[in-house]
Amino acid sequence: MAVTLTGCAEESKVSAPQMVSDSALGGLLLDVADIDEIMGTNSMRTHPPVTSMGDHRNLLPNVNCLGVWQVDEAPIYDPSHWKSVRQQMLRTPDTDTWDSLVVQSVVSYRTEDGPRLFLADSADRWGKCTNHNVNIQLNAQWLPAWKSGELTTTDDRLAMPYSRGSGDQTRSCQHVLQAAANVIIDVIACGPQTASFTKATDLAARIEAKMPR
Image (cartoon, rainbow, N blue to C red; front, top):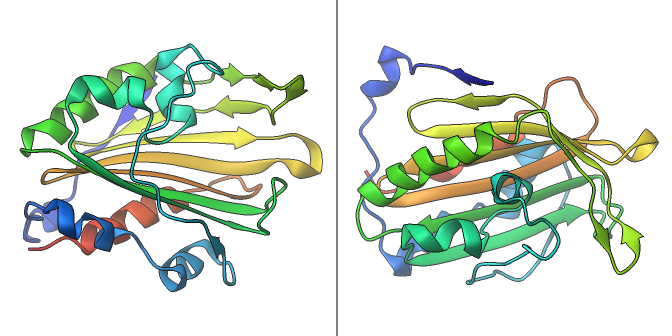
């Protein structure tokens, strides 16, 4: 089930974001100070930027959930004829047993229709991955268990909460897709377990605020 929200009238008074060139795309990614402020962390460790899509179909063949589980998946994006991508991961501590993690990315299209169509297609796929358990084995080792919640949609955003891990290693996460001008903002954020976790929404909004007006 998806919950649909409508934007406030006040938001419509804010000037709309303008088209972003490929040369300016990387400048939309947030710096460590912005991410620490939103996540409530201290000096998250940055990983080198990525400029290509991933492909994890070998781990999760279910394409309805693949785009929820990971950002920037080629099997999900390629049919939409995307143009360029900039992605970066940050986490603390910088180990596989991190407490907090952010994967932020921006994907450009040639027109403003591209992101809108991709968002609509993604809403259909994500809606089929609500309240879904994902258990993945890699090199004979089980990855942390993953369970999605309810999808929330607006005219320009999809937001899916999910939990990762178990016991004292449980982390609360959120994945957000947001369309703005010719860009899709694709963000995952995770932190210590809490009843309501909306940090990816906050991060995506901060990224959109950096777009030209």
